[in-house]
Image (cartoon, rainbow, N blue to C red; front, side, top):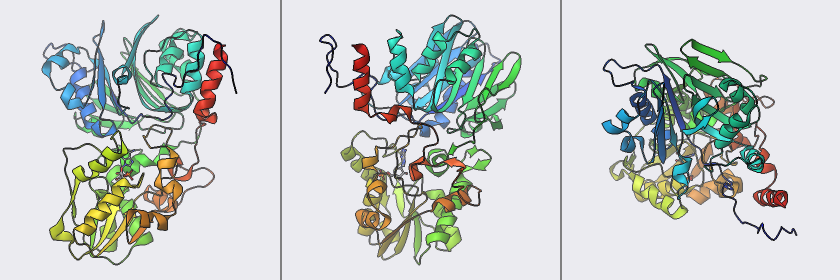
Length: 500
Ligand code: AMP
């Protein structure tokens, strides 16, 4: 039981009390994008192209903020990059040789537009725009303290706490204020930020999300993945290191490492599913890693079959690896319609079901009478696998065996990949045999943890110091989940108690 002051009636939902991370984002920043034709800089055009290459990292909204040395210009919109940033007028308005941009996957609803990044604020020292990929794990606690101190938040995004922490910092330079604020936040963050005269990139000490540095002539780029460098013909320089701050201005490039060093824990799910296969992350090409995972899977749980069929598109590289290793022919037994989004990014379970049918069709001519090995990257809720197995059986397959290029996903991600809560994860309820029955497959196998680590170039998963963040498979969260230490109800109660 608790009581509240009569004037502070209990509220079921605080505006930002959203229990689940929704950030699955891509970021891009460019410095020194001069143009020869007096357009005032090519930053926005390059950023739009970069965001287009990163569209797989977030499809619900996109934004660009540019800077022409005097003024900041911004455009943010719901929808795809191509739908909002392909007009000459929009790009012409975003003048400047510096720009940053962001792709976002977020919840639907009327609060969405105000959450679209880059976030921008005017400070004592001038303007600052910031774009964040990842998810902060103590944003709720910080926000409560900041609201208590009088900060007025404009969005429900976790990233906005960074803006307020910078605003109230007692340090004088932007970089010192940023460092001061980063020391207070916890969680996963790859950031690109832009001041009046500098582009800044930051990767959290564990390096959970990717961030790379590139060059194009005299211009510098910092972005989530190398595919965003390729699209504009920029050259890859190096990964921004975990815990590193890179500041680029007229003086050149400066690297600052203000945090105590911790063993890095890059997200292994980026390799399995999230990153684009043509990207190279931390020295490894994503496509090759996926093929190696498929080969490991064939070594670990191979069987006699007639065809290896990928669940397109994400299952394709590992199915190729599986087929090469097993000697079973690879065939496109399921055809994907490319004009629908990722099934996962659908608001309700019923629509998500429909999404699977909209998206895939079995190639009957090929599958009839065949023993099929289906390869997909993950089973989350099990919706996709169940539908696909049924579809392949209905197309006349005599046996359907499912092979998954990740270990069972039994735990939610709190570091920036959108996964459902634990109760909705099939692997949190069922062992593999029961999952096989649930999805209707004749057999089901997942890659082992060690098999996965071998595929990314290690002998095995080091149980004491795992080389990656694999919390979604193991439940071992490398970064404290401060906001989850009390449940949402506890958090509301303590907030109300503070108000009394
Ligand atoms: P489900 O139907 O819930 O089991 O989802 C599994 C499918 O969703 C797999 O085919 C994956 O390719 C895809 N998937 C897995 N994780 C994600 C994610 N975080 N965002 C979007 N799609 C995902």
